[in-house]
Image (cartoon, rainbow, N blue to C red; front, side, top):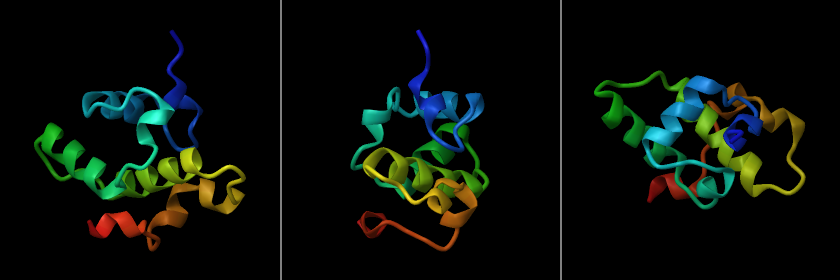
Length: 90
């Protein structure tokens, strides 16, 4: 079975496997998620603080999944360094 997470910009085999480890198996699983919470779960699973670029990639991935016509510039993970989702404050 093909891993649909690999269709998300910025998500490669390694991050897809990391998402599987924290309970995300398909794009729909990202809908409504808090990217900061996913990042914290990944850090906990890995037993160490993961590179913050992963947080930016999670923000990008959630934006991609939740946005019908995404801005091409926001499909580049590095453009999420200084952007957040309101739900990250929850």
